[in-house]
Image (cartoon, rainbow, N blue to C red; front, side, top):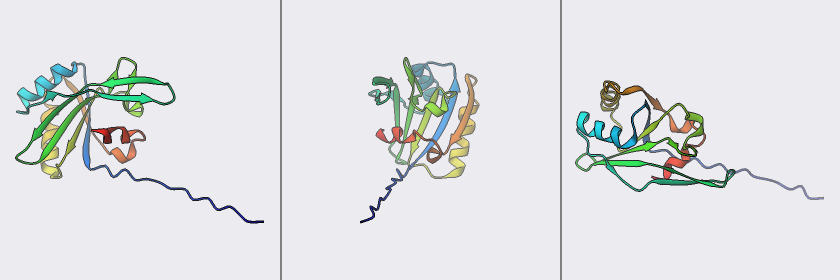
Length: 143
């Protein structure tokens, strides 16, 4: 009798972005406006991130605002973590927004950015998150 061998394949999504979690009572459009004025960015509304939850069978939409620093080749996505019918990252329900940053690797600049965001009065908290430690972070690869 032949033994059947089974192989388990695992896929490392290779997150190539910095992820910050933000806690605030501000609405998405208001937070992007505050960032534009306090951080000298140019966030603009883009298409919503639409996710279909396989278990629940419902569509969830999350607002996305984007800022591109073309001179330094850095892209920022400000993403709502909450929709009217659930969360983007269920494990991080306490977070209201996610700031996804592509192309930024200088730790001094990252630390300075976190400090600048923390200095905004309507921001309650800012956390750096390791996306590899978040089970559902692969949802963010769609951006």
